[in-house]
Length: 294
Image (cartoon, rainbow, N blue to C red; front, side, top):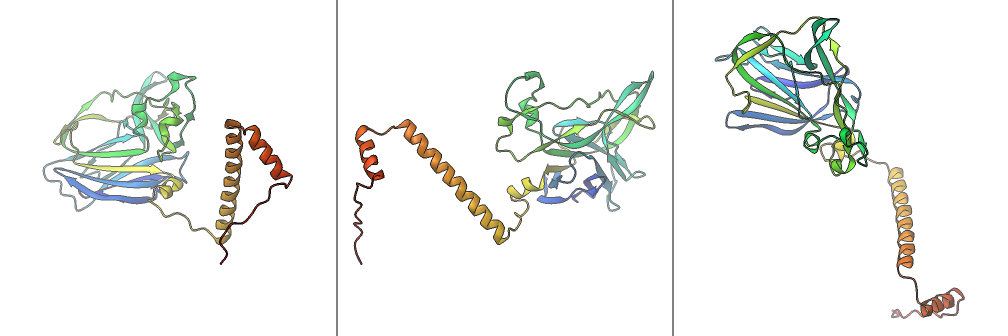
């Protein structure tokens, strides 16, 4: 679990904390600190996940009262992540919060987040349903940014809308060569037991500039992590290696036969070549071994 500026952050499902693998140690650039981890989501596909963050006892609160948490998943801004403070030193982001009229009343709702297999297509039959390339570039990343603030003013609503229709397809060629096989989708809006308290905070760090600290989680399947070198490849038995070699031999044999047929189709033999081949078939050609004798 990465810890930056005495704040920890991790990603969880009902099965527990997702397995993490270190990519980079915390890097400090000017006033920002950043840490990156890889997540194994192999056992979590189709399950809701949430992001936990916690202020450790060693954190010095001098000069600020709150730590505001900005969450982006696949480049999509998630509204409603609760801030940390001295009275409330731990919290979690379960999804995208927004207001919605339910039975004539304005209620706070949430779109829960879950991992889903990419919806890949081969053609442009429904161009309106194809995800923009600029959005595809952000797939596979959860980003949690921290900002300090010193106070807040209550406001009526978040102004955010529901995200439960995020399901555009992606061209196969757009993902060619990329390790991502899944993206993040959102559940239909679920009404919360009580309405959220929305607020505008007095930011000390520029909320549109460099964060105080940033956690980055790159989510992948176990197989993708293995092929990327993050995890070691599984050890194979002698029998498995033998079967793999035999399969490769069969594949090469088929490819060789296919290449020969294609060559014959593209370059048919002349009448003289046909006559020589017939002689070979009938055993009329004598083959002499000219290898030097030892």
